[in-house]
Amino acid sequence: MLLIPYVALLWLPFYNDTRPSLAGFPFFYWYQFLWVPLTSLLLYVVYKGLK
Image: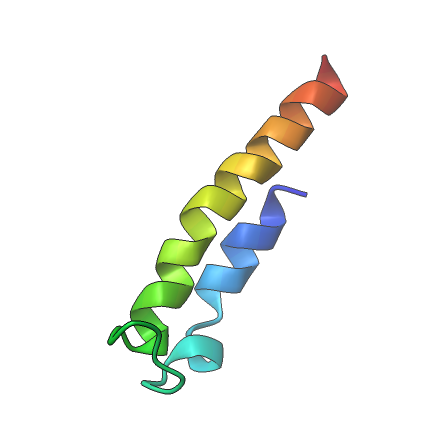
């Protein structure tokens, strides 16, 4: 489960684009920022699953 953000951010050709933009930010930037809370959520799920 922890490999999901790793692979999603490692595959650069998938998100190397300016469209669609969100609040003036190109897709390249907001896609990476989106993964910050998603990764935290995944870490929480893994932590609770191991506990």
